[in-house]
Amino acid sequence: MSDTVLRVQGVSKRFGGLQALSDVGITIHKGQVYGLIGPNGAGKTTFFNVITGLYTPDSGSFELGGTPYRPEAVHQVAKQGIARTFQNIRLFAEMTALENVMVGRHVRTHSGLVGAIFRTASFKAEEAAITQRAQELLDYVGIGHYAEYKARTLSYGDQRRLEIARALATDPKLIALDEPAAGMNATEKVVLRELIDRIRNDGRTILLIEHDVKLVMGLCDRVTVLDYGKAIAEGTPAEVQRNEQVIEAYLGAGHKATA
Ligand SMILES: Nc1ncnc2c1ncn2[C@@H]1O[C@H](COP(=O)(O)OP(=O)(O)OP(=O)(O)O)[C@@H](O)[C@H]1O
Image 1: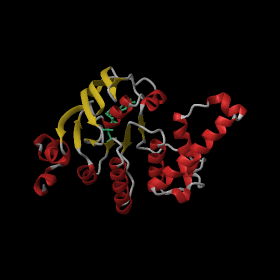
Image 2 (image 1 turned 120 degrees about the vertical axis):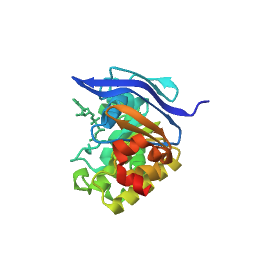
Image 3 (image 1 turned 30 degrees about the horizontal axis):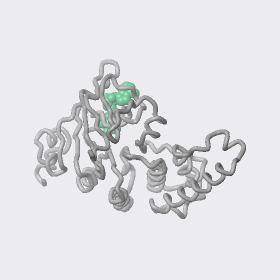
């Protein structure tokens, strides 16, 4: 059986006169941390938005866990198995950390609206299980002691970890992290790196957009480099770091001197 989690081919997306993505494809295998890097405006977020159903692509074919999928609506994509976090954190600010994770878990529940209204026995049992699982996930990302705090009162780093817990709550085949280290200090980045490593070691598959080159190169199994909407390189971190076009477009001459 193939261990391909995500196979995306030929994705193009135009905004008016701007070709934001031209024929971009990636293949991610189970257990990989896959990095998507490139300069500002290269198309990374657009690519994320396409595969998670936020933007409709002009072309492209999509396969998740060996099954074709159409990334037409965010909730459908979540149900099919891709969970994501956002560059600009999107939590329910007035809800507690625990409730935020419970919302993620509801993607996988069955009792539905009727059960919720009549508070059936199966609904109550499901709610108890969801609460327990949400608490476990908060503990897992290291913020279990903030379960009853409102999301908006958590530090930036903890809010990002909460977003990851919420994404994990959907039991995703693939977890897509959009600049998880943005705005983090050096200590928070170390903790984040350990967390992403742990998530991978627990058998999950991760797609990562990240500007912090050290983090990307230290964590990722493979990397695709985008520039002006095109994939200019693909390979292991060591391979792309040596690629002349990547050095020119993204890493810079300083990098070349020290690499
Ligand atoms: N909704 C939109 N409407 C019009 N243009 C857009 C839209 N979203 C993105 N773009 C444009 O598409 C190009 C790619 O943007 P995108 O945000 O995907 O880049 P990025 O690689 O994620 O950049 P950054 O690292 O700054 O987040 C940019 O020129 C951007 O202005």
